[in-house]
Amino acid sequence: MDILIIEDEPATAKDLEETIHNLNMDLKVLDIVDSISEGTEWFRKNGQPDLILSDIQLADGLSFELLKKVDVSCPVIFCTAYDEYAIRAFAANGIDYLLKPINEDKLSKSLKRYQLLNDHFARNNPHLQQLLQKVQGQLQTYRSNFLISFQDKMIPIGVVDIAFFYTENGITKLYTMSGKSYTLPYTLEQLEQLLDPKMFFRANRQYIISYSAISSVESYVSRKMCVNMLVDVPTPLLVSKKRSPVFLGWLKER
Image (tube, helix red, strand yellow):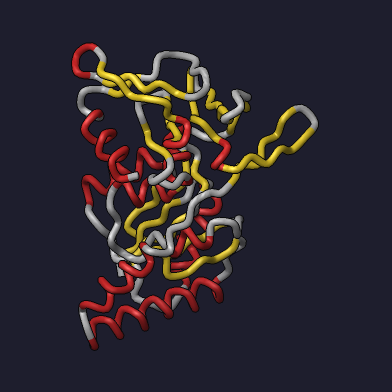
């Protein structure tokens, strides 16, 4: 069984690799990647492994972004210190969710579970795996609110009250329907994974906008589109010529 490890902490990655080697199983660690960018390049050159052992929080984002970006089709065992991503993990080809620290017993049981599932699918019906993936995809859940740290307070803001997200100079801000703004510790790429695509649209490199906050849309120069919002925006909100058909399709689906 060929395994890829996705882990950004060198000591943890080494411990995980040694634990795998110590198991009396037919296992081979192909490589260790520590970021979305490195992982993207690895998959481009090598294709799919048999199994992935993956942390979730990487230095340049969440591993879900990488798995979606490269369209991973193999099973994934998530190894993380956080329990809040469990539902998303099982919607991303996850077959197990192990909380750190990972010991030999935990990992052995998880790998044996994978082998049993793999043998069962291969023996009984090759279409079962496709069915499982379809069901997992239907489990996708999205954020209903964000807990914002502001001065000495924690403020919960529901996504229904968000007009748009805006980024500039590496700083991302959330703007509410009442015009207030708050800084967020997320990139727009990370927010795309957390937000319901039926409610929010990535308009360009700087904006993710809410359907509920759109006032009107009008044609702009060079076949771009200008989006007018119900609240003031920091800079003109333009959708490129290339993105305009996708944007119009999104609007019509509402």
